[in-house]
Amino acid sequence: GAARSNGSGGSSAASAAARSVGDGELYEAHDYRAVELDKSNVLMVGPTGCGKTLLAQTLARQVGVPYASVDATCLTQAGYVGEDVESILHKLLVAANYDVRAAERGIVYIDEVDKIARKAENVSITRDVSGEGVQQALLKMLEGTVVNVPEKGGRKNPRGDFIAIDTSNIMFILGGAFHGLEEIVAARIRASPSFGGHRHQDDFWRELRRKNETMLAHAVVSDFVRFGMIPELMGRLPVHVALAPLSVEQLVEVLVRPRNALIRQYSAQLALNGARLEVSDSALRWIATRAARSDSGARGLRRITESLLLDAMYELPSSVQRISAAVSAPAFEVVVDAPAETELAFEEQGAYVEIRRAASDTANDAQTSGERDDVDGDDDAVEDELAEEASGM
Picture: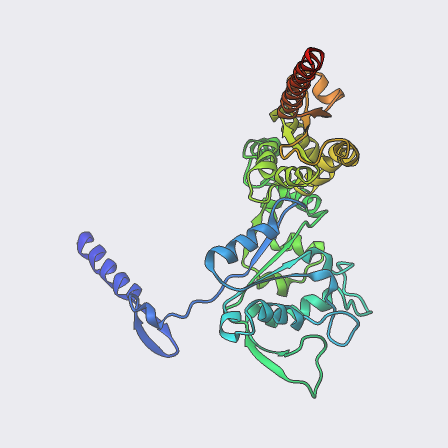
């Protein structure tokens, strides 16, 4: 009897699951053509220099759709000095070469979205045109609506021409550093009796360090609201991604692996002055370690590398002028080295730069001087022969 009842219950549940209700009509669950897919906008939270913009660019490149990146700090509410939110779609339209259908399936990345947080958690009497006003203006665009975009960009002109763009299938990715959000999350977790699902608070912090996670990974909508984001905007961002700072090993790969890596850029720059750049592994790790400690991520790599090579780039042009222009091989070597990471001098001394004469250039000089000696010897022998013939005559 129990088996019969379970069987009947299972069959009824299966038959109920096989049908879904939509618009007053019944559809079979396997008939996916009747299902309309909605987009899921993304909010990326992470420190500066961790690759938020690069992730959005790479995603658009892999998918093969138009991509536009805008800065939220220049946006203002309609009617005030600054750019309207419609300018975002105009940049996407330009990236799509004014192909409206392609632009309606593009990706828009809005950077520095944490800078448009409202100044206070309480409702202000005065208008916050560059903060909460921008968030309110983004609501319908993120959710999906038809926006009239000025054909030539800029402010809306009632007499101007407009292009209607449907944002229902445009993916919006919002990113920001959200400085101060970690303290809000930590305060909430400390006040919670569950400590993030752990019995003791120490267990939570120990698990956080073991997984190498940041407090941003445990942020919820209420934390963002306390930070200054309005709940309506957070409801239109269902996917939250927390990015961790880049490690030393990852920063070393950023220095050397990409096609336009920083070390390759400086190598090409020094090659214009007839020099070859050589950077040791320990020097790469020293540069990456300094960048990781400066809390500037990958953006700090250029500042540190520039300070290391600045004197060498200043001295090289005057040194190359003393070398013959006929020499095609690099005349100098710029060597960047550092003590081993296990040594105490790695912290105290750090990386250092040396400018040396290239080994091939030294060999060429020796070969040239040897040939010059041979020529001088041949000239002396010819002069002796001419002197003997003159005396015989």
